[in-house]
Image 1: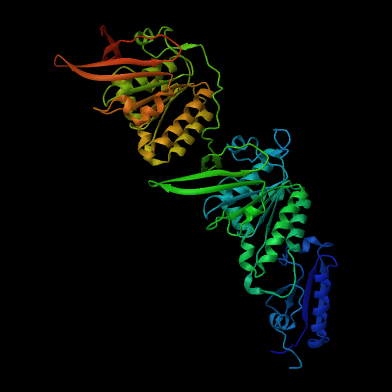
Image 2 (image 1 turned 60 degrees about the horizontal axis):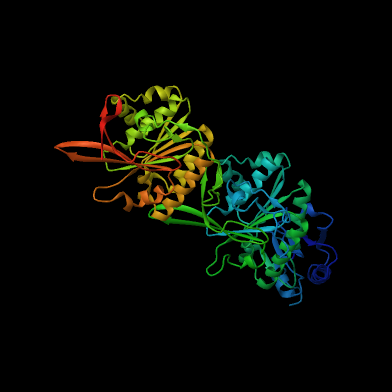
Length: 96
Length: 476
């Protein structure tokens, strides 16, 4: 298990709310740190595309979905706890 | 509270038969309604019927947001009730959104809100122009999440949002230990709260409904029995009917000319109720049969409820005394409906009767004997049912005849069924067998008959090949 291959992450937000902005800033930071060059973060604003909420079973905002690698994982909240996010996404920290 | 008239609070018909009557027109329009009850009490069905009937009967599209069952399960479950979810979905009248929360694949970290649900709901509502919304059962969201405080405030926000959206919503909630719902949703939904209950009394299952709260509207406060059958839920208002039916002055025959003469009017009023009491073997059923035949002869359809004899047996027995039920049945003037009293609860009996009343529109109904029903309920329940039954019959201008069995040594004034019915019946006839000079003599006495003078004598009669024949002498 390493951080090989591409990581496809999807962040669901609903407008530029403080939680959403914070979540995006957090996940970008973690990815830059641990998955540099190996990740894609797609941001989906449900205010603009409400029909996309049902497909990924989104009920809380913000929600981060790990599409690849499988299995699907979801982390809800502003992602402020780095350790929880990394464990939740199963990312092995680089410098530890 | 500014709402004191009927006009101020707009109502949405519930689509559940009988419930509009209790709620004076339905649910509060554009407001959330909480339906709570224990597992298996019919909450989801209640909600589904509200939506489906809303679409089919009132052309109000609806959104079903399910937190428990999947759309395919829901579709299957309600197929048997004739709710065609697939068709309604295809017609863009119904939208089902299944909110599935898999605890195992979700991690919580930091602040969040439930905006996702708002967005999905909003999208679903706007995509079909929904007027009705069901959230079933939103509380299950609590079991998947950690932050209770946040969830509570978000659910409160959701209810406010629903109100602003102007949709009439049903929110279902599981019955809690000490509160109406596990998470105390009743604190947030303050406009209308309905409690469903399912209990088994003396081995007979009864479902009941009570309106706990209905802000700004008058409503019935009793517990109302309700039924789930192949056409969904129907509620039976116990006492919501008022004493305001029309009274007929038309006189009809009892089927026995000699008995008719005992009334100053020459018969009984149309749409009145007759009670016949007597011990076993006092010819109550025969008297009832004469009444039924007189109705058939007037070409008025007649419904005979038999709780003791099968239709065949009744036809055979009556044939021996010259009462031709067979022909009346063939002419479709008479329908005999036989069932065991203990087969179903009181409500179901009443329901079957109500249904037949709707379908056949009989002008005469006979229940033989009504005392059988007492074996399946306590006196209060039986009485309540009889009151409802009689009111319904009066309202529909149906002639009613009930027989009731009394026992030896038990005065007719001391019998619970008689007690329940006699005050409601317009005419009360008591039958008796007694031994006189080594001979058994049958006799009949009119105990009361409202709105007319009547004979006070006990009339002797015999049973012949032509039915009841009065003998000449009257006993003082």
